[in-house]
View 1: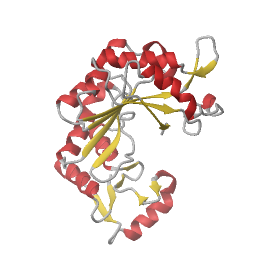
View 2 (view 1 turned 135 degrees about the horizontal axis):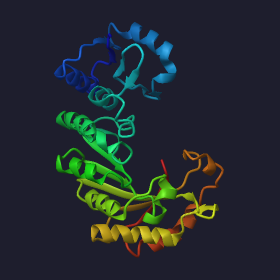
View 3 (view 1 turned 60 degrees about the horizontal axis):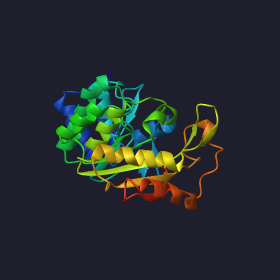
View 4 (view 1 turned 90 degrees about the vertical axis):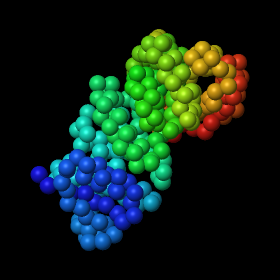
Length: 281
């Protein structure tokens, strides 16, 4: 099997990827888009356009292929070699550039594959990238390992709502103590942000409505209980039907920002720094 990697001159993340491959004795053929590999990449891109991410800034390098599988981005490529496809859920494409990198959701992956994620984060950190993580509560023990090993610089934690509604809001139940532990750990990262989206949900009786101000107050109270502080950076986001992945909510009308004030009032009883943010992204 021949591994090929398309890179770009001056691409720091390409260099980090190559260093990982070299350290692990993984042979590959490199094609530099800015040099001899321009024509090769043009043909490769034309044949695989739908599988290669490109935005207004162009294609994200590096791009790796073994002739069948295409992987793009430093984290995804290293994760592929570290643990195959077992890190699905933990790692996705980074939306940040420069010294910061994201695309890591501590809560979405299989905790049995934690070592693979730690391997990826450790390599990135060794090469001076600043790592932004996401969590919504599950896998608190893994979050603790990441914190103790200094592998995260910023944590963005979504608290879906009250513990009793987690199954309806996220598809998974969560133990209250685990959620409390994750919130407590969030406070120990160099930078952190807590947020809740005022989202619709299907109630036990089958009706669909938004989280209530009282339920947001209950969520803010849980943050106080976990952190022993009323002064956490807590953001309330407006639900955006255009970005939801739940088909049943795509036709739900977005809440007016003015309707959010009553939510903020309830939240500020327990988190005095609560603010209203933009629509969820």
